[in-house]
Length: 389
Picture 1 (cartoon, rainbow, N blue to C red):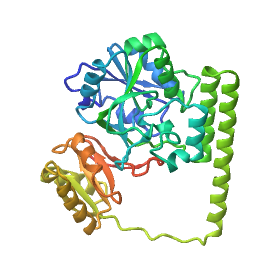
Picture 2 (cartoon, helix red, strand yellow):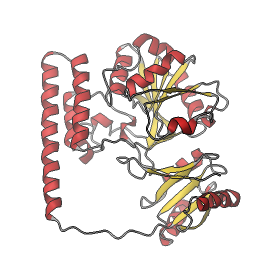
Picture 3 (cartoon, rainbow, N blue to C red):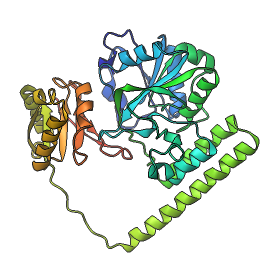
Picture 4 (cartoon, rainbow, N blue to C red):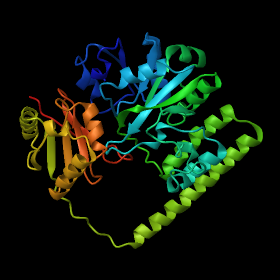
């Protein structure tokens, strides 16, 4: 984040929702230019973000999830784009997960009764490009074009401060899910326009504890939508909305029960662990430094070599991408650790979207103390803590 703020007059405020992983001790005195607010309890996404607003002095406010990686140009390009749009309300960018897959929630429509039913019942997933069934994710609109949209995701929302002064910030009645939908709705209702900006791509690891598509997620989403409906709908529309939400929950519960039943019938089998074959994408100097750190952490036996960063920087073109993909497949590569340095995060984000889906990725930010990654948007991901002593 600090590197993404280069050449921009910016202030960074971090709110910790009572982490129990030693974050406070770890970050103490490491970033003197960053303001930390340490909550004594988990107050939820909306309230935590609102706590930072009194300290914000900038023309634009960026609400950003901690499980994100920003390319260096991201903020400068986003601010340039939104500043040129008529009556701008908020801006969201193209988000991908840690495996390079596009995250559909980057652009959304408002959750009408039918669009919510199609989403929760799974029809949006079955017909991902349908203008009707996938309307919630605007599936008929290209992820590679920029345009006005209804709803942006709270993981990255860039908003002019004057807009928040008019609409107010997140509604703290929402604890998890729905607060970004509500704020997007109020921004649009106030006469401003929300924009999806596709020219910059951000990694969002999405390590939530509630798995998408699970019955528990449906219930949490239903609760958030219940708050939204009571706030913005009335009469027959509200009743229809809640009826369809209940139907979606029963459908999900039915399929969840059927799936569990058949899993119990199938014979248990242990899947042999696949031997990891890991490449480090780096320069020679970065490679040697990383090997030393990994050796101190006791994790060098799975590494099979270096993927030259200098070659990756010049890999534009379908033929070169195909050749690299083929060579990685033949080498049975299971994972690549990308080292930031010679390769910028902009380079890395471009590369991972072109390589085979069978390969996993981890990322190392220069000067940091961990290698992080997540190859499944529904899991918390994993990390390698490096011994830098």
